[in-house]
Length: 514
Image (cartoon, rainbow, N blue to C red; front, side):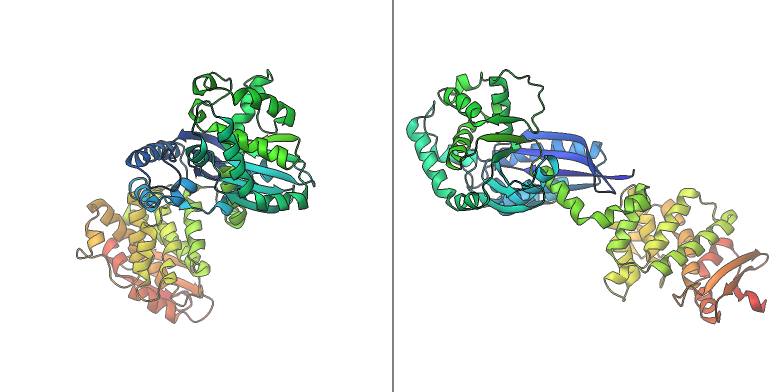
């Protein structure tokens, strides 16, 4: 089944995590690759200005992710930023630097949007039932809570109680002291007051932990219980008693001894403690006795949302499995193209290409470019009727069409541009900047396009068919549904470039009046 390859990047406070998936036309997606880079943007406190070293670590991580995307032929990158970038006074500078240097845009999203995406990811990746569950995603700057069941999100909220923020604000000692824990717990109680009411209403029986902190806690508990490291963490379940047994031992350890704990990601050693305190508080406060683990988190939620909003567009995968053809049709759909006219012009342009092969001596690739240029030649109408041919050129060369080289995109854009008005001139700056070989191909293909466009001057597909007879004059005999005069007039006005190519006159006549 055809697929579209996209990447989703979750730019968190502690880590940037990317996944690459193939999205299929039926809405399924399959994993291709992933990459996680620890960046710890919140070292100096979430909400403060990002430092030069924050910028360096963040950009280095994104360069690696972009390189992976390029090697994996990713067609679209979806990048969402959370607390550290969203709240930083200079977060916008970081977003702009990514655009300038790496060529993709980061979208900073609010906490409630994070929670929504996380909820969709858990619904997609776990076996839920009608009974509500409480999802907790502990990030670096914020923690998201979602109450859901297998069919709907019942409640979402985001609070600024991520582990980086809490560590910076409350963890003063190593090992952590009771007073530190009490201060953290008191803060949690204040921040989660509104969640308590929703828990009372929906009575979730299980806590589902997603993202790095909760997965790392699950990994350590699995090791603590003597389970293999190769265990699949998705759907892994442990009891409140399992958690408390581990908690009582781990919280007594200093940093050096924590690093020796099996299952701990050493890059989280300085931030894991407030996460454990939060799990304990939630289990005890809300009377929950079971914890399950989701390996799907916000990044998968980004994919799920993309699929939901692009189901119709994804059906193009079935209709156009070829990357080049699909990319062109995605652009056509975006700009509300005049389908009947453009397809008719394309059909006639290709027939002219085939009939006049001995003159232009172009190859099958050029024929394909002519086809696509003909389909796209009028998309400039989306901007304005006036000078729409120039708008078509602009759209085509700036739309990042997939599967084409830059040279091919420039040829298609210029062929579309010259379907009306002026023929190619040296004074046209974009045209004159192209190689002589490109210019020659554009002139030949543009001539065929102009003549074909003239043959549908009415835009009503009046020409049913035509034949070419090549003698001293190239005679094009058209068969029409109704009066042929307008199409003859339109084609005769646009014949000059073909005449130059074949070095003889072109005559367009009605087949009925030969």
